[in-house]
Amino acid sequence: MTAEGGIVKRRKLGKAAAWLGVILFLAWLPSFLPFSVEWNIGSWLDPIWLRLFGHSSGIETYRIDIGLHHATLAALFVIMAMGLNLSIGFAGLLDLGFIAFVAIGAYIMAIELTRVPLNSDSVRVFSAWWAVIPLCIFGAVLVRVALGATCLRLRGDYLAIVTLGFGEITRVALKNDLFGLTGGPDGIFLSPRVMPEFFSDPEPLYYLAAALALLSCFTLYRWKNSRAGRAWEAVREDEVAAAACGINVFRAKIWAYGLGGVFAGLAGALYALHNTTAHPTDYDFIESVKVVVMVVLGGMGSIAGVAFGSVVFILLLEVLRGLAHYRMLIFGATLVALMVFRPQGLAGRAGK
Amino acid sequence: MAFLEFRGVCATYGGPDVLHDLNFSVERNEIVTLIGANGAGKTTTLLALSGLVRKSAGSIIFDGEDITNLAPHKIVQRGIIHVPEGRGIFPRLTVMENLTMGAYSVGKVSEEKLEAAFRLFPILEERKAQPGGTLSGGEQQMLAIARGLMPDPKLLLLDEPSLGVAPMLVEKIFEALREIHASGTPILLVEQNAHKALELADRGYVIENGRLGISGSGQELLRDPRIMEAYLGI
Ligand SMILES: Nc1ncnc2c1ncn2[C@@H]1O[C@H](COP(=O)(O)OP(=O)(O)O)[C@@H](O)[C@H]1O
Ligand SMILES: [Mg+2]
Image 1 (cartoon, each protein chain N blue to C red):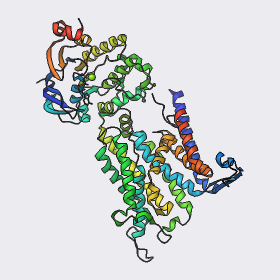
Image 2 (image 1 turned 30 degrees about the vertical axis):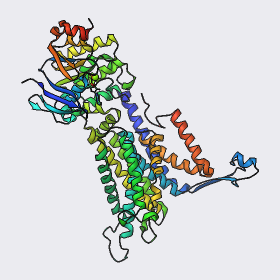
Image 3 (image 1 turned 45 degrees about the vertical axis):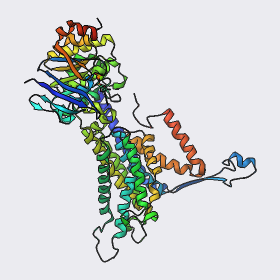
Image 4 (image 1 turned 90 degrees about the horizontal axis):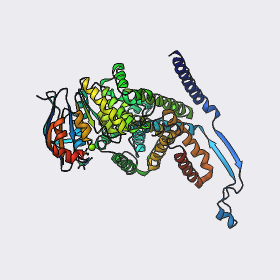
């Protein structure tokens, strides 16, 4: 008993130390960025057919540039991935339109910031930008619950199809100036005049995003080990068996799906501030796929794994940027290799 | 009034009715079995009872209460616990986690229930930390039954506990059912293995194409020439 207790204690200490390490790392990260390297690679990257005809693509150096905004971006994607992890990883609800809910958060933030009169003397209703964030979260959750209520009673793949469609509809609606508010194909630009002063330097946004990313992970960790977390796990594994255990399957699903909106709305609000715009092309289908890949890459349901997976994904995209059009090729190959050799993701629980 | 009563129950998966005008009952402290061929409607009957399939007519009365249109989790709260067909366990959760999940409706898993389950199926205690999916078919069935015992059921529904289980383990499982019954839990058992089921049961009903046919005590049915021919292969 005591030996077991000792091991548990040591494990807990180890975990605490790991988290402390992560926090310290995040705190010092800005002083290491931007990070930039450059190699001379000659014509190594030129495709064979160009070389056959004696041509050259002209790319002779390979650069890797990682700036603070990439760290911020990674943190924002960690928040998104946690939201999707809640749906896919915890409750097994495949959502292929997650970015639409991020877009809802981003557009609410952008609309609020640009609509409020900027008179230095007048105190605004939403005088503080941060007071808009709950509104972004509320909007995303509301739409998500409404959508979930219509299709979560259906079985299996319907949700994937409905969310896929919803994601596209949302993007097209935003592009077509929904309610005359979303600015059409140009989106909504957040000029320095309307951007909160707090974000005139990039550091505050980074620290905010990093802190909220950590908070998201922590929240998910708490939920995973709660009664609701167990219910989600049961529903994901086997719906009939979950019902036989007395779990209200529909309610469990609605909660998992709806709460994912909290993270989407939050990440969206910050994403608009990060991009200083809310633009329809930022909420393309491929963005939803990215978040799905992060969750799958990290290991569905695993919190540390998905957080790590998201950061690796964003950094990898930057590291491979120098490969230009080969980037996606290598990326795809990496993913396929991963799925072959480690189908449960970097840190997921092995299947049966 | 009977403990559980089906009164003219019809059930549907959304298309035409699969069950037609089912009337039967289970008394407190009885083991009742429904036997029938593959596709006869045995599973559907249990799903209808636990609220997982829609009833298009009739009513189900349990312990004096009409539970026909209650949601599945409400029915579990009333004490009707369904042990689903086949591998109705959570394959990626450990044996212990599976058992804990069984106690979901009552909050925490009770030490006493856990010990009783391990006494019934000692193999589960040995495999406590192993994922459910790594157990043999028979062991998974034992786990499913043990999980069903966690919330202290008032009525236990079992869907073909002998399906895909090695003969030696079938013996053990039926022995366990006898013990569960002896400790005061009524059982509604659905089986294709008519011989074993009728040996164990106080009463039995035959279900055919979604309708109830012959019924009687277990012993009577075992000796009934129609049953012998159709279900016992004698
Ligand atoms: N999910 C379903 N949807 C539609 N029909 C079903 C479904 N499951 C079973 N059925 C039909 O209901 C009838 C009874 O099936 P079932 O209750 O599973 O039989 P049993 O358990 O006795 O083998 C069968 O004709 C079967 O085709
Ligand atoms: Mg069946």
